[in-house]
Image 1 (cartoon, rainbow, N blue to C red):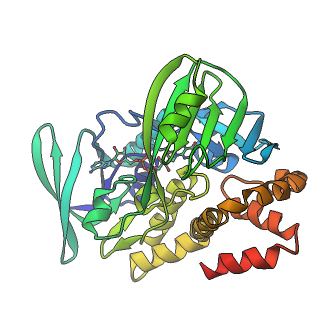
Image 2 (image 1 turned 180 degrees about the vertical axis):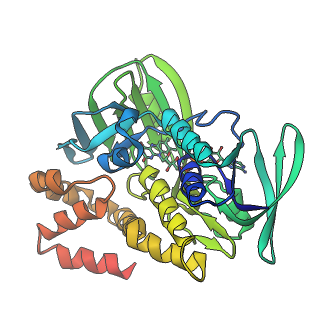
Length: 359
Ligand SMILES: Cc1cc2nc3c(=O)[nH]c(=O)nc-3n(C[C@H](O)[C@H](O)[C@H](O)COP(=O)(O)OP(=O)(O)OC[C@H]3O[C@@H](n4cnc5c(N)ncnc54)[C@H](O)[C@@H]3O)c2cc1C
């Protein structure tokens, strides 16, 4: 019997398999993909914090600035901490680390379902060779936004936003974010320079039209897409746990989920060392490490949705606090920027803060 069955060899799953294997646990890691990391849906834009964890060797570009467009005008931000990493290489590197640490990796293998029994889980896997029954003491869902593990644990799914991305041959070195909700009512559009080409994407309703408009006249090299979960879910149930996108841990304001995928795995692996309930320890460690920021981010997102009609008010606020935003701005901690903007305007602060707390 395995100690842990990990479903999904994306960044969350491979990272936790590596961490648990290093602790001496017997880990089976499975992914329905035939090759790790392929196909890839992600743009790979991360803060230096992620680079520090995964290694400088994965950096393929460092954009020199970021331009934010809103219905009331645009402003630029410095991007000293921003990098674009090679997402396929990231997945491969983490999977190789997991295997080197002792995890058994099976590709082309899909979790169909599982049952929680007394002291173990019994899972049914499907691969080219047919069906396989496997037992493990614990199961970890690192199987992304549409998680089968989450569904089997009867945990409510987060909202899922469809995201479309075209890779075009144009080369720039500026990240562009378009927050105009007349074009993408649920989220935003982006342009991310990889150094080799530009990734033009958009999320939520209207995204296909937005991407077509933004890439018009460019040579389209690839079309791809994925889902972004909005809103954190429960982290587990009994002997099953969720990490990364399966638990809706992407940032609700930016959709970025790589940092949370790595940090949630770190918190869960630490929980395996503690006495008593692994789930309770995981919840505690996650809140301490990055979970409280993910929750705050979700509340900011709901607030932004509510105050959408006051966009024209927000933009001058953001513009006039630009030098400060450049100092405190951090893609992993959007709440710092949000609170900074509010703090710069003592009259609006109590009103918005009251709304924020009431959610
Ligand atoms: C268009 C787009 C752009 C993005 N850009 C960025 C960005 O620039 N920066 C950033 O930080 N984040 C970005 N994200 C988010 C980021 O990609 C995710 O947060 C990240 O991939 C989460 O990693 P994960 O390991 O939790 O899940 P995933 O990467 O989704 O991995 C889940 C794995 O589980 C496997 N799987 C699923 N179901 C099963 C099953 N039943 N059996 C076996 N295997 C299964 C899948 O094949 C997959 O390999 C983007 C997302 C999208 C959609």
